[in-house]
Length: 268
Image (cartoon, rainbow, N blue to C red):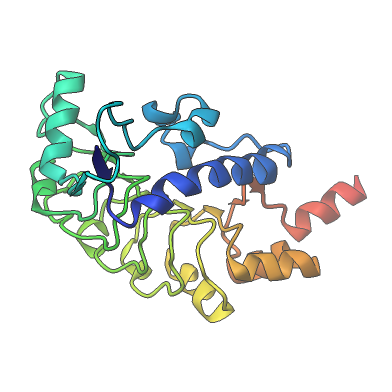
């Protein structure tokens, strides 16, 4: 019997998807908000086109009837490299990655663990999707001089270091379902308009107010962070968040209504 073992982080890669779909649907669609599908890069990954199939996927092939299951060879599947993922993407799409404006490397099997130097070949890329992998650090974005949208949702990213290379061009960062607690380094993104970072680990207002250093920020999704959950439970999340980020136009998918607008409607 040949047992294929995925990297340890792959457990979270597969296991978190059902919870992610349910949580996103219940908190966003249930609230009457049609989520822009930033977290799914516009579509469900091909290996899970049917949600129940994820739980039923058979990762260990059955052994032949004449083989003793105790006599097996275990092979640890190596993580997919960026170079390998790009080669598969080129084969699938018929495009050259170095010339493409949009490159999708999400949900690789086995998952990507490192953003390596092969990313530097994407000189024309405006939108890069690396969600649903096992990436721990943001790195090697120096060659992406035209990058406007970066999707890193559902990885294992712990901080925002490494974004300075695209600070002058990045307009949207999709980084929900990671492990981010501190927002140090986010101030480098002077053109960032959209930030989706739900379901991370931000607990303190002292971290949240660092978002005020983003002069162009107008659309923020922050639900699922401990800070948001605490103040939503107390009934004052929107008030407290918008007080600290007065330029926001949308918060968690809902238009931000200014106090003067409320008063104007009341007078009418």
